[in-house]
Image (tube, rainbow, N blue to C red; front, side, top):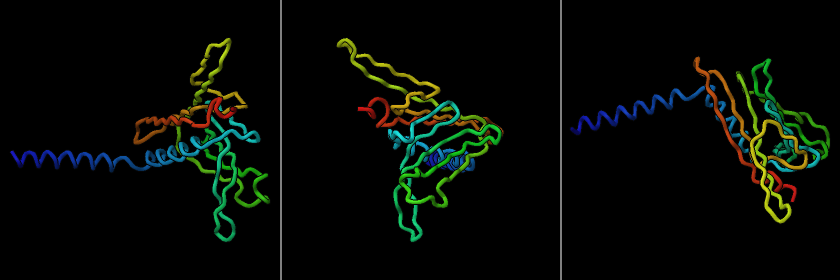
Length: 188
């Protein structure tokens, strides 16, 4: 009986180890990309020179970035961060552009790009939430939409879904990010 319990435990551990080992390669790269995306999107803010823009295939927003000067000292800059799906290259391209008025001179490396390939499809969605008082009654409008058109606010949330091939199987990974400063909160 004890030997059966030990063999059963060992078998379960071996199956778990094999599952962890098979979860690598490109899927791990996509998950790491999604972690960075979530961090950047959650920390976006309303900034009038860099308006939040988004449709189902791309988006851009204001972000805070870090750079190093010639002596290796770290400093903080404002950036325009964008994500665009390039269907011809089957790539999701992340682009970071320094916001010119905050950088003393045009420096090399003011635009940085990174690609996640091969991606079959990308879908962005944006969560809108507005609360207004009309005629003494509270009115709430909310929902997911495929395009962000409000230039005065940023969304309360962003949903990204990436579809790719992994070992002959089509896999979709999604991430939903809620933005603390989003919605009509940013305009008050």
